[in-house]
Length: 178
Image (cartoon, rainbow, N blue to C red; front, side):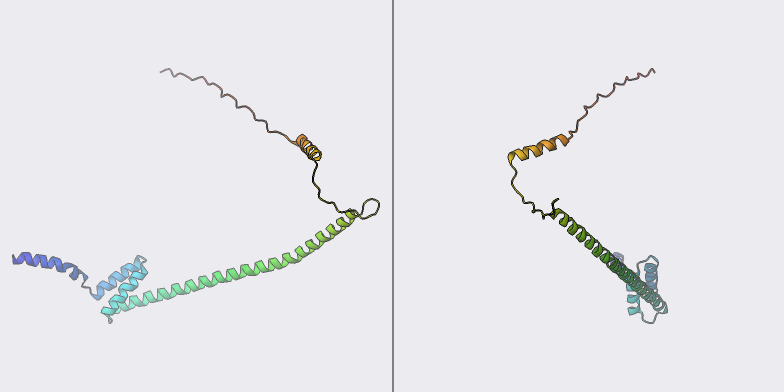
C-alpha cells in the first residue's frame, strides 16, 4: 500500500522533477535552439537560465554570442534598408531627369503641332479664289443622303463566308489476326 502511494506520488512529481533544471540544462537547451536556428527561443532559454543562475559562465558566454548575432542582424537589416532607400532615391532621380529631358522634347513637338495646325487652318480658310472659307456647320441628314451613305458603305463590306465542315474521312479498321 505504501509502495503504491510512493509510485503514484513519484509519477505525480516526475514532471516537476524533469522541470527542475540546472544551469547546464538551460545552456544545452539554449545551444540546441541556437543550432536549429530558433534564435528567439535560444535567447529566452538563456535569459531564463541567467535569471536563475546569474554566475554561470557558460550561460553568460552563450548570451554574449546571441547578443552579438542579434546586433549583426540589426546592422545587416539597417544596411539593407539603406541600400533599398538609396536605390529608390536613385530611381527617383533618374525618373526626374528623364522627365526633364522629355519635357523640352514635348514642348518642341507641341510647338510643331501648333504650327502645322495653324498653317493648315489658314490654307483651309482660304478657298481657291483667295477668299476666307466659311466654317462648316453641322446639319441633319436627309433620308436620301443617309441612304446614299449606307449604299456606299455596303459596297465596301465583305462578308465572312463560312466553310462547311468537312466530313471526317472514314478509316478502315484493321482487324487483327491473332
